[in-house]
Length: 116
Image 1 (cartoon, rainbow, N blue to C red):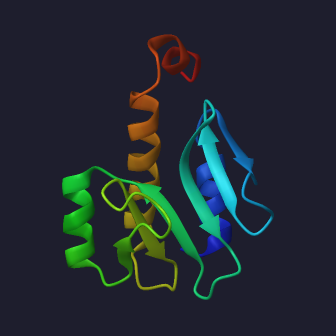
Image 2: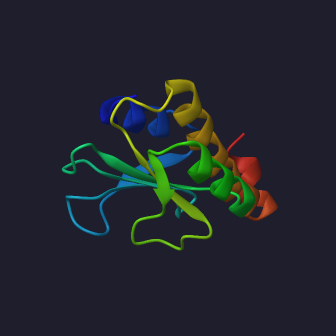
Image 3: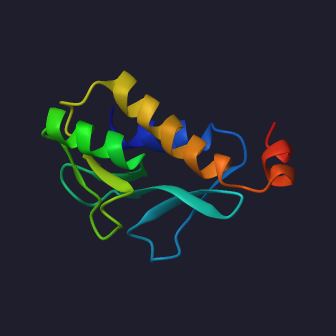
């Protein structure tokens, strides 16, 4: 998956907005005002951060060389993925959904229902 596909996949999820609160060099994807993904397009290969269940985060880091602890994030809850082409596209899509679902699951019921 390349960065363009990553961004498009994030934006295709219900209620997602792309923002740049840290400046134009970092794209932040939020649902109901809460961040679930960010991308650093200028890095080569591009890096993206995704929220992840802590146990699963460790398993993914052990299994994939291109998944590392979250860069500039809480390393317990965030992973950084290097989009250099070695990670399966299906895995990256699934991890985007996982991150989104973690954030949506933490929202108040009314906010969750408004996304359906």
